[in-house]
Image 1: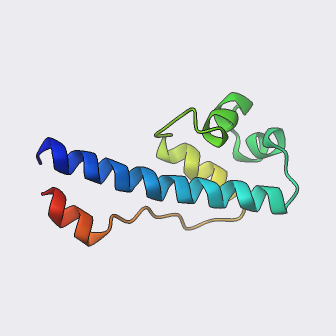
Image 2: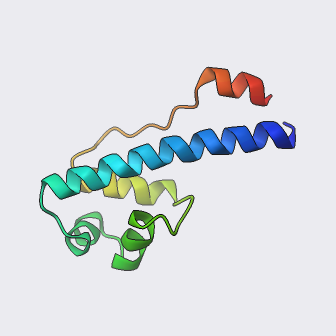
Length: 90
């Protein structure tokens, strides 16, 4: 994979990851969960949740995202790469 394709794939991955993160934090807000409560429910430290929520961590560990999703009732989390982006990146 060339550098240009890799950058496009990374941009797409980051966009999908940001959408997923937004969904998680929106669900937490609807449940009136503070970030501290979210961290406790996900069994993560508050600093991790704050960094993900404030977009300090650009590419959080997938397991952290899964734990956060489970804490707000998202039990099936998948990151799907758009086929068009994958073909162009190759």
